[in-house]
Image (cartoon, helix red, strand yellow):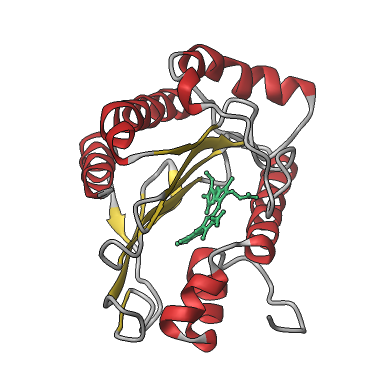
Length: 241
Ligand code: BLA
C-alpha cells in the first residue's frame, strides 16, 4: 500500500543526487517471518550521496496485517539541516498512521527561523493531515517540528492526500538542502556529529517498533536491526528490553 511512496522517493533520489549503495550488515537487509498468520517480509535499502551521509528506508509487508514504509535521510555532517523522517504505518486496515517531518537537530530560535518556519506554507496545504495527535512514545518537542504531518487516516486518504503531501515534503526537502551552505568549521561540524548521534540514541531508546520486530523476527534480530542499522550511532543500553 505504501509502495508508490517508496517508488517515488527512490526515483526522485536517483534523479536528483549522485547515489552510491551502502552495505547493510549481514542478515539485516532482508528477513522473512512465518511466525504470524501472514508471512512478513522486511527489506531495507541504504545509500549515500555527497549531500547525504545516510539514506535508509525499510518496507515491511505482512499483507493486511501490516504495511510499513519507514525512512530517515541524514544530511552530511557539514549540514546542520533537519533529517527527513518518514513513518507510514498500516495495521489491519483499521489503524493507519502517517508521519512525515523535517526533524530538527536543534531547538534554538535562529535554527527554527532558518529551517522550521519555511515549512509552514507547505504544511498549511495539508491541514487535514496535521492532527495534533498526542505522542505516547516520543516527545513532540524533541526532534519533531511543529509542521510535521501526523494523522490517523484511511486507505482512500493515503492515496488522495498523503501521497501528494509526501511528494511535496520530499521535493521541498531537496530544495532546502540545496539552499544550505555546508559548514567548513571543525567545531560546528563536531556539534552536528553529536546532534545526529543524539538523535540516533533518542530514537533507538524510544522506537515503538522494537516489539513489532521482535514479534516477527525475534528479540536478537530486533536489537541488531535497531542498533546496527536503523540507529547505528546509538549505543545499546546495558539492560535490554
Ligand atoms: C509511531 N512507529 C510508530 C509506531 C510503530 C512505528 C509500530 C507505533 C504505532 C502505534 O501503535 O501507535 C513503527 N518505527 C516503526 C518502524 C520503524 C520505526 C516499523 O522506526 C522502522 C522500520 N518514526 C520514525 C520516524 C519518524 C517517526 C523517522 O521512525 C518521523 C517522521 C514518527 N512514529 C512516529 C511518530 C509516532 C510513530 C510521531 C507516534 C508515536 C507516539 O505516539 O509517540
